[in-house]
Image: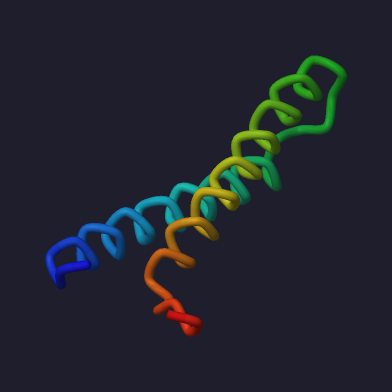
Amino acid sequence: MTEEEKQKIRDKLEALKLEHRDLDEAIHHMPRTIHTQMQISRLKKRKLRLKDEIIKLENMLIPDILA
């Protein structure tokens, strides 16, 4: 993997982490009413998908030790 490719992954990681933090803040500050529970659930699912993508990209940056 070239250094340019690694930098693109790092940039994407930073953007995903920022979005993950923003979602966390939004969920934390949302009122806990019946009307918002479905919205909160969707935001939490999005947060989990972001976390999975973050882990996947971080693993791409880790050199393969067995290689």
